Structures are given as C-alpha cells and as structure tokens.
Amino acid sequence: MMRETRVGSGWGAHLGQPVNRRAVLRRAAGVIAVAPVLSLLAACGGDGDEPTSTPAASGGEPATEAPSNTPEAVASPTDSSEPEATEAPTEAAEPTGTTAAAATEPASTGGTFPATVTHKYGTTTVEIEPKRVVSLGYNDQDQILAFGVTPVAARYWYGDETNVIFPWAEASLTGPAPAVLNMPELDFELIASYSPDLIIAIYSGITEEEYATLSQIAPTVAQLGDYIDYGMPWEETTRLVGAALGQPERAEEIISEIDDLFTTYRAENPIFEESTVAVAAMREDGSNFALFNVEDGRARIITGLGLTIPESIIDVLDPNTFFTNFSNEQLNILNSVDVVTWLQVPFAGGRDAIEKNPLYARLRVATEGRHVFVEGDVDNAIAFNSPLSIAFTLEAIVPHLVAALDGDPTTNEPPMA
Image: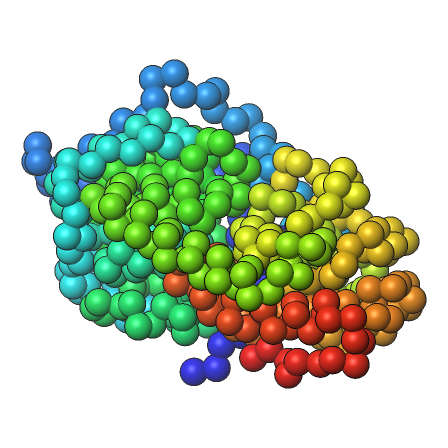
C-alpha cells in the first residue's frame, strides 16, 4: 500500500509533531469521559493483582491553559490561530481490523516484575507482566516493538490511516499488527475497551488530568519532566519504556547498539564534527520557515552524527518549544551554518520550490549546494526518532550530508525515497 508522507494542513502537522486541540478542550473531554470509563471498568471487573499507577502526591498544579511548550500552543507563522489537526477524523475512528479487546493476541514482555518508573506526573508501578499494552504516544509503538512486544492498539499519527507500522518496524512485529487508534483527542472509553494492563503515553503531550483518567484504566507512563513535550531524547525514552516493560538491561543494550552506529558514522566522516547545521522546514506557500530546537528528536539525530547547531541559531530559538517560526526576511540566519537540513519538503511544494524561493536562492548555503532535502520514508523515519527508525534514517541521510559538505556544489546524491 502506498504511504503518504503526512496528512493535514496545519503548520504543526507539517513539522511532524502531533497536533491536538487546546488543553482546555482536552480537560473537558477528560471530565466528560471519566464516568463512562469508570462504568466500563466496573463492568469489566478486576482484582487485586492488577498493576497500579500512582501519581506523585506533590505533582504540579493542573494546567489552566495550553502550556507554551506543547504543539497546540505554537502559533502559526502567519497568524496566532490554532494549528489545524490532521485530516484524520475528529472523532475517534473504530480501530482498523480489530474492534474488540479479545480480538488481538496479547503480547508477552519477557521482563521482570514488579517494575516501577518515575515520570512527569509521578510514579507508576507495574506489578505483573503486562499482556495488553496500549501505545498512546504518537511514535511509542516503535519503542515498544524494540523490546519484542507488539501493542494491542497504537495511536495514529500520520500517513496511511489504516496502519501505524512503518517499513522500518515491520520486521519487529511479533503478532497481529496493532489496532489503529485514530483519535486526535483521547477517547478514554475506546482505550478502555482494549482492556489494557499498561498504557505507554510518552510522545503524547498528555496533560496531568488526562494522565489521571488514563491511570484509572491501567498503569500509565508519561514522559519525563526534564524535557519539553515531544523533546525527550530517544535514549531516555528507550530507558523509560524498557523499565516499564521490565527490561532495563535490554534498554541499555539497544542504546549501546545505536550509539555504536553513530560512533561509526562519526569516525568515517570526521568532517561532521567540524561542521555546523540548521534543521529547518518551510511553509507550503514559501512565506515562512521554521528552525527546530536542539531538543527536538530530528535535530538530535543530526547532531548525534557530530554536527553542531551553532550559538547563532540557538540564540534566536524559543527554548520552550520544539520549533521557532521566522519570516523569510530572516532566512539569512542560515548563512551562519555549514549545511541546512530541510525536513517536511513535500509541504513546501517540493525541493524545487525551496531552491527557487528568491530569498533562499541567493544565500551562500543555496548557491554552494550546502543543503540536504529529507524526503519520503526517510522524512517519516527521522520524525519517529526511535531505535527502529534511526538506522534507516542514517543509512539514507549520511551520504547526502557528506555530499553537501564536500565543497563541490555539483555533487548530487539521488533523491531520498
């Protein structure tokens, strides 16, 4: 089946980040959903052996407005209107293929339990081995699959609306593909219908209220509080998921394997550690562009190769969000770096549209061919930023970075697929 690169027209969606509605709407949805969820849980029954999740007693005050570091709070480059959600249905769609909890084979983690993890909203203890893991972070299914566990259901982000498993992750499936949770807003009743015994919601941007509701369904793991939403390093996500699945040692093995890959590429290409980079995306009408924060997962992959984002870029970035918008009159910022890595290229009208943008075309990085255009499944892979997608990303992107930095504007690599 052909896979789309992205769905949606909002600027946040173009940048590859999940775009939900504002937190106030999510809180309202959470309040409304509590009663039916509790009713459903009562109907399903339970016993004292079920895993438990306990929010921190001294947790932060519930948010009263959309936090400034979440994608839904980031303004459009041209106005302050809320970014649109993806073109996925605004109500949760019935999961594709399987619609009942009993229809999906339970997974086995092979881990050691009880397992306790600490995260943004408190401490979660998984008392017994989870058999029915639900993935609510937009790319968390990759992390779960890396531990040999196939979730019973996973949240849709973009692309083919009937599938949440991308090419680089297909070989890691250990059972039926996860049911697709197509829900721009969390549908607590639908989540509960899968009878999860563990919910992974790291790359999700969930609020504390949503976490509290999810924790009534099953033990829930949110992201660490040390990072902006959607800005947690893949290594820390791997450790957190591994701990929740009772496999902390395997987490360290996975991290070591990927670190070795980065080390090899750095050693083979010493020019990377001598070079600076900007990670950028251009708006579809060519009127604005954005630069990704150093904490963004995509930027972390590029800098993991040894390239650095210089102070000239860092100083103009908003440290509280994953990207910062600029008008095209500020494109000359890019002349301060050795190479520009362009993401979300199709939404700018393609590589040709970026290269022909009159304000960009006159920059030295453009005239000297010091740019890389990340396209197709490689763009999807760098956005996922997972142990399964990183090798796929690096294999494709490294030759393009080498060509962009070799000092010869005529060097061209074939377009990424």
